[in-house]
Length: 449
Image (cartoon, rainbow, N blue to C red; front, side, top):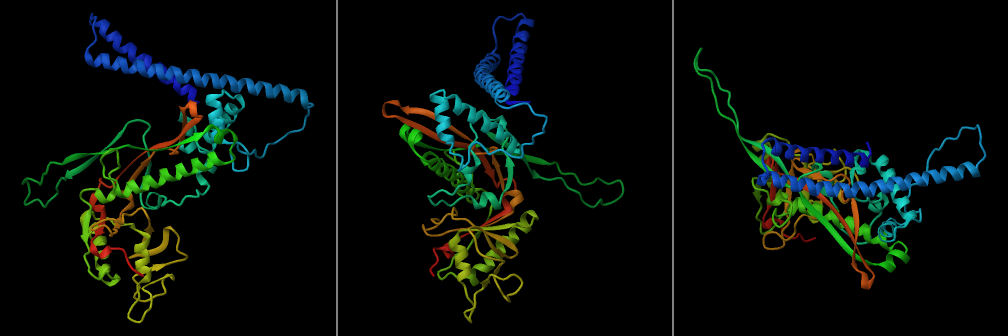
């Protein structure tokens, strides 16, 4: 079913819902609607108008696509002699690549503001390509424009911390198509099963109870004003800006997963989640030797509290470097890049260290190096170390986020156009807060080397 078909189907469903409300009023011989009925009808009318607008827009595009196909077929029939030979198309270059010469941003602008048919045709072709290439994330269901993958993959020139925790240490899910909250039931009082004292005597009974965990869906967005000259006459500048907006979006998401306050539109991050095991490491002369028991404590509190095995350590790159710099009394490094070889090693590595997935393990768990870990805790110079159980550290993202790019004229008198990248996400460690541990304290002040 195409996206247009889905819009039409939903429009018919909205009409059926509205008719059902009005028929119920007529059946009761009423002339007025209740407040609830009136609110529902108003909402359905508003949705039907929005759907009508989208249907008209996409029907026009479908008609235009059909006409283009007819013209191409006619030209091909005239230009090419009939042949009985069989032709097989092996591959066709994608519409938007770094080498194609086509600008996604310029086409989006020209299609919207200049009714450029060629630009509209390229965008339509790109949407069809994305629906095939990325059908598992359902890009065909989005009314917005799907950003070409090469814009996501190309490295942005401005250095950003990225999303190591989001990529390596969370249980990832696709955000539901609608709604601004996710609700999960958490059992807070369990049932019981005990030894029966004697035959026919009462068996144990404890009533189960639960509480609702509500997780807010948050919006992350970025914008940039671009001159029309940049869009129309620039070479690669528009893509340069979009790349950086996308990178900024992912970095902010990762930062929120770790540090969000849960207020003012923020995600409730790991460090601010109530119930996470708190381990204090205060030390006037920090050392790996003194830190190590705290790491073991963080590990065992998860196993003791929720009977799970933790899966990852998350720490700032400077804390990983603190471990790497440690030596024993003979000046031999405690962390060495050779698995199964060293004796009495605090941690080990199996190859070259890389940002994010560091290549090192600690107590058998991989170390995630993430520069989004706070370094201003405590008196203002402390970082924190997290021990997490990925299956209970959840992240929901809108399929393809940040998946849309929109343009709004913001300064016609100054030839200015606004470019916006946005997407939706939700995260929580609150299902089993004790499946994560946080080590904090003066022992984690900025290390010296």
